Amino acid sequence: MINTALQGIQDNNAELRGVFRSINFNSESMLGNPQQKVTKLRTLLEDFKPLCLEPSQIEVGPGEDPAYVIGDAYEYMVGEFAAEAGKKAGSFFTPSMVSELMGMLTAPRAGDSIYDPTCGSASLLIRTARQAGNLDQVAIYGQEMNGSSWSMARMNLFIHGIHVSGNDIAWGDTLANPQHLDSDGNLKQFDVIVANMPFSLDKWQKALIPAVRMTVPATRKRSSR
Image (tube, rainbow, N blue to C red):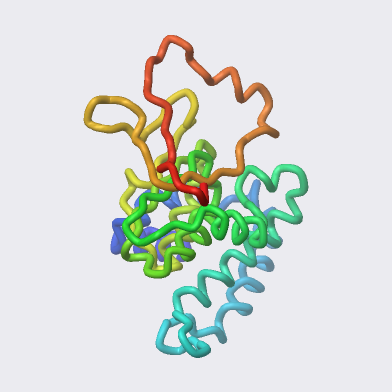
């Protein structure tokens, strides 16, 4: 029933197509034998049953957006999961304080395009975009090679009320197969670029292909960059 519900969410929200493709609540390898699985799922449903997550029912302070309250809760849970993951956490999550600082340093403005070539769960992208004030006035782009992290990024943006297409947050190896190209086939350029680079990924430099001739993306020349 949970799998069916997730499929229905995808069918009714084009921005979430493919996000739940690897999630299977019938999986014994993930949830254990039938008895263990039932116990875990019952506990999960009991924890969420009393919660009403409709935006109109979310308590907010002055100037706060209900989508941000829910989105920040989602990021908190992602952060807790990252802490449990240890060294692998860097592959999908940049600590919120670091993301906040990077957003302040790059100082995006209305009308800017913001890009993260290794976007993970998109927490860095979101906090950088929020520095511009009105999210409707900035364009957000990212790419992520890990399928699970890509799904988290799409979900994170959706929960925060940030609407992007499947092409804006691309899935694939940015170094070996960059997805954001201009009309001439060169790398697309952006006003603001932020990233937690994949230095912990073994042999990540092997993805560079010298034979591919493309223009290196660059930020606009500003004193704040």
